[in-house]
Image 1 (tube, helix red, strand yellow):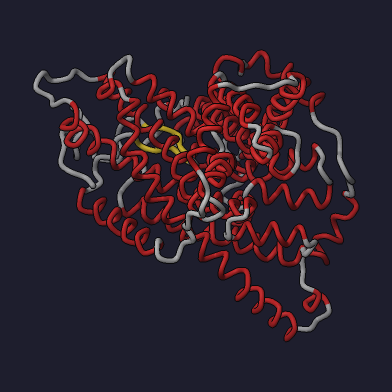
Image 2: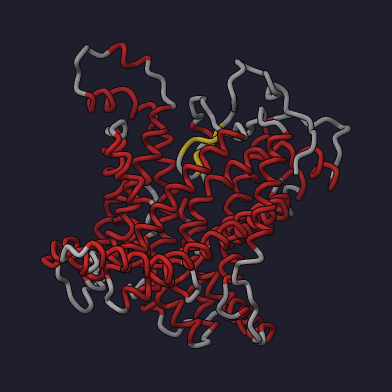
Length: 539
């Protein structure tokens, strides 16, 4: 939990102008976040953490966390050998898979970022906010399954699956970044000037560093999304990874994983503004051809007939109510319960992972040299998509909810620990250490963790909605969450069932996002300060 600790000079409660979170901030998830929100009281934080822990313990009794009788050590040894001795006999295929993974991500971000910027200028309208909340609440894989019914296994399906939810995310984040900017420059503009010109001349120039920083971060997210689109058949790295794991070809799987980690780790070196036009042209050329069919003319029939139950289309209200009742009892409720149970367990386990691993990557505790192995560990955890981690754990533990919980906790724990470690290093480099400051476990327990805990908890709440979406999508691997029933509905060409289940998933995400906002407000983890662009870089 949280114990009393010392505050850096000038950041103690009440320092500065008295506003909450007065100090450096970082863009995370969907808005600026304070690195040192010290006004959160230990009692409130402990109460919230205790509640989450109790809920997670209660969830253990209902979640499907069975470990099936397999020989994990032999399989784990083969996987480890494949990672240590990777091999790929067809380099052209590997290069194409990497290129197509980057192509989907780059083009999707290039389209969704300007679209999100435009929507952010209209975000004051309730209809725009509802639209953005709806599209970003549906996971990219679910969007992929939807668009696959219209466009087949095509470039259009892959691009739309990423850019549609990303546009909603960009709109929300950009709007909140704009809210952090000063309104004083607007006083110099003529009255009655077009609102878009006001953004162009005042808010966008102020927020430009933060907008670019967040766009770079979303590009990394898009690479992960592009990779896992291979699980539904698109020819990205995920397609070859799933095939290699299913066939037990762990050396090939190791080569693919190392290629993806190298891709993520070197983003800062190969993503250069002057090279973006060349990358865009190359990305268009690398997009795959359509496999199966492409029937965009089917769109109207799909949204007006196929996604609605037959009884409702025929005006049979009683029959429609019976259909919805049967769906709720047989699929919605079981999938909903398992999704929520796994989410809450993974959320608390994520926090424990953060507390365990973030010291390994900090200069103040691991040292200037020994922190690099810890940072490499965090790179692996945060860069490997949850679906891939869950797939590996399923080989070891069998098809239950346990692989999903472990995968979600490790990936999100690695991401949050990376941010917490960065915050620790930023403070360590900007302040003079006292000679009598404790070292080792005492420093961890009485200085570092109390300082980092409020921000860590805020990061955890930001990831809550993401963990929920990922828990649902784990059903594609056979885990009995909402995604399992959605995937089954698409396989049976029962689009009415799939639409209902996806709508329930989206509504659940909106509710959890609202609850996480309330908890962040309760723990006083919100920032009202204009962001310092020097602290916005995620890498």
